[in-house]
Length: 85
Ligand code: FES
Image (cartoon, rainbow, N blue to C red):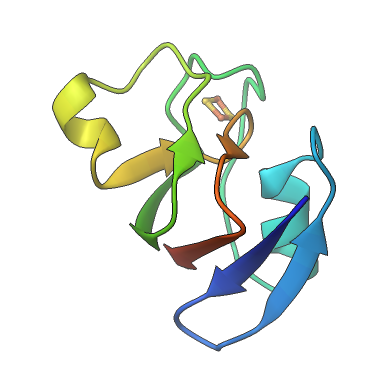
């Protein structure tokens, strides 16, 4: 589990290990697009600011992963993840 924080509003919530970051962001009021929900279309891209995302998508380049994640499939390897959403 980890704490997901929105930098825009400061809202946060606990996300279970294996839980959907996309659903958690929406539950926190973030408007995040999605289409494939399988890490291949690129629709759910979110910028992250702090923490250690675990990328499971197949669209982001290594460079892009340093600043962005795909919320439909990403997990988190740190206790806290802050996203710009
Ligand atoms: Fe397609 Fe996330 S919804 S990559």
